[in-house]
Amino acid sequence: MGKKSRVKTQKSGSGANTVVSPKEMMNLISELLQKCSSAAPSGGKEWEEYIQIRGLVEKIRKKQKGLSTVFDGNREDYFPDLMCWAQENGASCDGFTVTDFGTEGYGLRATRDIKAEELFLWIPRKMLMTVESAQNSLLGPLYGQDRIMQAMGNVTLALHLLCERASPSSFWLPYIRSLPQEYDTPLYYQQDDVQLLLGTQAVQDVLSQYKNTARQYAYFYKLVQITTGYNLEDDRCECVALQDYKENEQIYIFYGTRSNAEFVIHNGFFFQDNAHDRVKIKLGVSKSERLYAMKAEVLARAGIPASCVFALHCNEPPISAQLLAFLRVFCMTEEELKDYLLGDGAINKIFTLGNSEFPVSWENEIKLWTFLENRAALLLKTYKTTSEDDRSFLEKPDLSLHSRLAVQLRLAEKEILEKVSASGRDKRLHFQKKLEEGAPLPHFEESDIALLENNDTDAKLPIILRKLEEVEKGDELQVEEPLLNGEKVSFGTEKIQQVSRDVTSEQMGQTEAPELSANRTEDIPKENSE
Image (cartoon, rainbow, N blue to C red; front, side, top):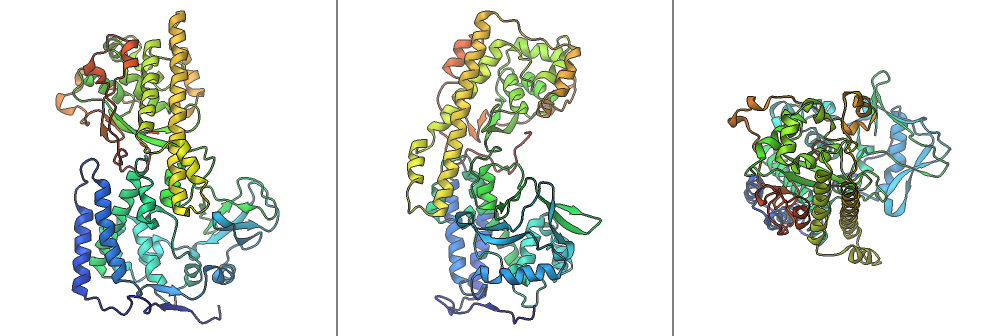
């Protein structure tokens, strides 16, 4: 680029001159690794564990203060160098420019009109930092020996970036100098900001991410002490506009169908009006239930585990075909279970479990929507604030960005649960009316297969056909006690018992509300079976 590199290793400032013995640092690292590698704490103890891990991390950060690689000036000072470097190496640089969009941060602004489906951005492969380029760097020998690096590409890339950042002659230096010094993901939150997420469905993922990151750091410190697609023909990464952009409009990238919890945790921003927003919920059939074996078998034939993480969606319908099928089986009577296992057309009936056009019975629909209505209402009661409280909180002018993100996420979860509860009530009343009117129940015929095929693809369930008598006792699905977001709960409600008197307390549980806390969600990054 013709300019002298301004990279340097910071060795001044508060605490920078303090000499830290290698033994002292290694003791702290070992303590951190041991703490992060221990078994998950019992219910309600995750926050205490987070405080302990954070305390160790802050001690290490304090002792390492002043040793990081920093660059002179501000981030935006390096944008011209970045664009020149990109152009010199064959990337497209016409039609857009880097612009500060205020609260949204830096992004691309169109400098001309861009049509939908127009290819406006491409980056040659040689400019990309990849696992392959990491293998060809000084990390190559370590990559060849370490199984964690081989299995986790994100860890390899993180180490690759750190090594290149410390090298004044790095090919990627113009890119690296343009990166932010810190991010707005929960990893960078102050403890008070993280505390605002307690009680949300996302908090377990936030705490797990912090613990996992700290564990990986400690492991590698001890080890070394130190919407795009790829065009194979042109050997480059390409970006195509999904919509028209006018000159001076901001150009957005499509991250995929992520929930706002995923956006906040992994990207550091909240997407208002996210049509793909959802809340995770874990449900399971009680292994001690009298009808457990029959329910587990019907679920297995539909390809659904007896204990599973589902999602409640912000739009109608609020549940997927998988969750609808699970709830139908969960609420089946013994006679209904026998019919789906051994009755006429049992194989074909499995296909209809996730299709809203073919109820098991009006009573079954009433039970499942009543259950969903009450579960959502119970979850809403576990938050320490109301939706109105959160909206008022967001109006504070002095609210920090991280606190705002936490409260926005908390409010979004509540709004989804409120919609689910209201939707459950409407559905319950609808099917109660059907039952009272004596409306005929739609029956699935073989000729209706076209209806299933032309319906939403989400309504298609994978089928695993097995005969009930072939299931060995030792082969039964091993699941936990009845679960709701990781907590042992009771599935029954007074309303459900009013609908069907033949449902025993053993089948549906008791009526106490569960005490759900910060450990309600499981450490599962992606929705299961959705």
